[in-house]
Image (tube, rainbow, N blue to C red; front, top):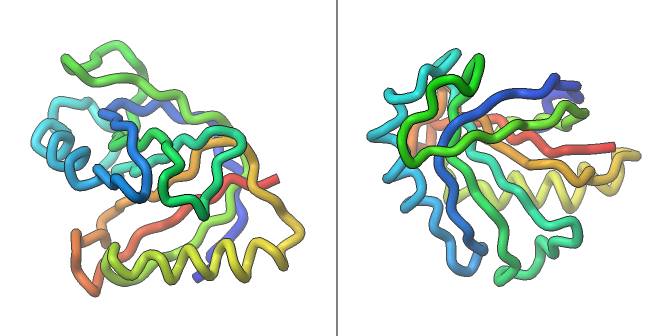
Length: 155
């Protein structure tokens, strides 16, 4: 599951966002509105970002804790922003990168490993920056053969 520690430079992203909690998960609604319009974005590549912005004291164990979720594509600049879409500047920083294989419904197992096993034994702690998943060429929505990278901000 654990792949690597990686520093990234800042990234310019464009997409849509929704406020939600795990108890009131609106992820499907967000991606249903984004996917038909993704071709309107002059993206650098085919990778998509599923990104979460948490408040500094976010309680990951509280299913009612609200956060902002984004569906995004990376761009070179913010010169052409499609109507009703927004920009997001992902700050540079250090990330622990994990590979999740399987359907999204099995994702909780990967997150249990990250936060319950890997993180407490890693010597790192969570940094107050966005968390995200990269949905690349091997991502297959709701398929047991799907693969995605999970990026956790660390310090």
